[in-house]
Amino acid sequence: MMKVLIISDTHRRDDRFLRVMEQEAPVDMIIHAGDAEGSEDYFEQIAGMPLLYVSGNNDYSSLAPRSLVFPIGHHRVFLTHGHLYQVSRSTQMLQEEARSRHCQIAIFGHTHRPVIEREADGLLILNPGSLAYPRQSGYQPSYIILTINDKDELTVEIRYLK
Image (cartoon, rainbow, N blue to C red):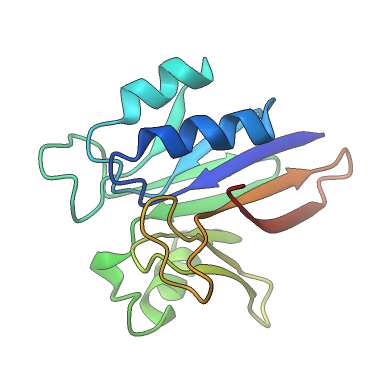
């Protein structure tokens, strides 16, 4: 079993990352969908593992890539912050990009609203929301836990900071 923590839009609210790690440890992988605003190295130190991350629209001095493609188990993942794909309007451009890269999972941030959607063709679209400034009903800081079992089956759940 593999446990993946997916976060986004932490906006230097590092204390909230610490609390998520306390709630969810141990995790096998951490993915950040942008707008960490320079906290990436600190997060890696706290977690004791490398972080997969992309730069967001508020990561002004970041040298991180705008997007990444990588595997989780046998699934190809497209990771981007989302602002370059107009995700505030719809996920259509994001979906097209993920499909063009032969990915089965698309992860984005930017909107500060958690999303788990599965398209008819099986493409899984994930947004963990924001740990810093949530915009969904209830305004609770959110993140996603993705688990993969030994049969390479995915379970995805939006969770909230306690």
